[in-house]
Structures are given as structure tokens and as C-alpha cells.
Image 1 (cartoon, rainbow, N blue to C red):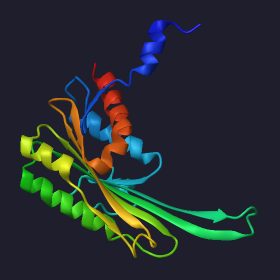
Image 2 (image 1 turned 180 degrees about the vertical axis):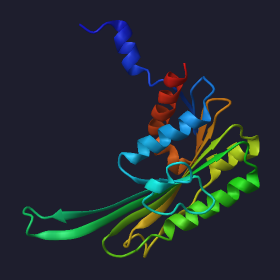
Image 3 (image 1 turned 90 degrees about the vertical axis):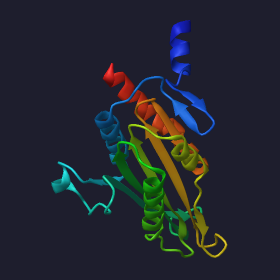
Image 4 (image 1 turned 60 degrees about the horizontal axis):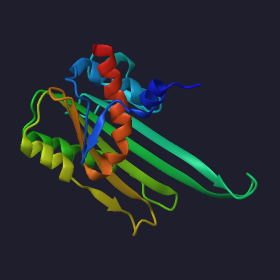
Length: 207
């Protein structure tokens, strides 16, 4: 029989949530957070980085970022039997990582614009294209109020031929190490659980 403590432990995600943010209740360590993000994304994405592992890079990291992750999947839909193929479905995501001490609003805006433009530059709209999305993950020691508000309010999206040829969305996540908080724009809120689990893992290691 499962004890009450075990039930509570399973029900507790290990972090608190608020409007557009999560709170770990614990300061975080830059190197561990960065490494855990890279390890997590490496499971399903091709990842390259601008540090000691550059010899293992599968592609060149976009200038201005510390690491980059790419997911490009093309699946096929079939009707009843595999021989009767309906369509190819192309879905892709490009994730850009930046590790900074205390980014200014102007610095974050430049990163935001570059990640969005570089991400959707990979899009190949067409009947088989579902989506090509861009993600920016910023790891910072400290964020000021203007930066926090910018993260929450940022929005980029594009559709191709009224979405008949797919669409692109932009997700922005900013981790503030000193406070143990992470902030998300609206489109990035689907990443809250993933990011919370990554930061929770860092919290457990750092104890």
C-alpha cells in the first residue's frame, strides 16, 4: 500500500508555478543548469555547442549563441494500409541557448530577433510542411523588471498561405539563477514542465 508521504511526493512537481513563470525556491548554478539543458535536448535533438565539445559538433552554432539544438522530423501518414500514403508531414524546431550574467533589454531584444529570424529561415513551406518553430533559452544570473516583462509579452508567429502550408511559432524562456525562477512567453508555457524538471534536477544535484 502506498503511504501518504509517497502520494504527496509523487503529486509534488518540485516547483511552484505563477503567471508566466515557475519558482524553484532555490538559487541555481549556471554550469549545472546549462549542462542539464544540453543533456535533456540531446536525447531527441542534434546539439552543437561553442565550448570544449566543439570537435563533436554536427553543425556550426549560429554566431552569438552558446549552443544550438535542432529537431527535424518527417513522418508519413497512411490510410488504412501503408501502401496508400496520404501525405508526408514535416515538423522542425530550432533551439538557441545563451548564457549571460545580466542581459540588458537591448541585448535580449537582439537575441530574440536573431533566434526568431534564424529559426524560421529553415522553414520550407509547402503542402507537407506542418511547422518550423524557433526557441530561445536564456540562462542569466539576474534579470531586471524590464527584461522579465519583455520575456512574458514577447510574441512572434507566422503562417504560410493561411496555415495551409504550415506555421512558425516562437518560444522564449529566461532562467534567473539568483532567484531560482524561470520566465516564459505565452507560446513557451508548454515548456514549463520540461524546464521545471530540468531545474529540479539541478536543484537536487546542487544540495
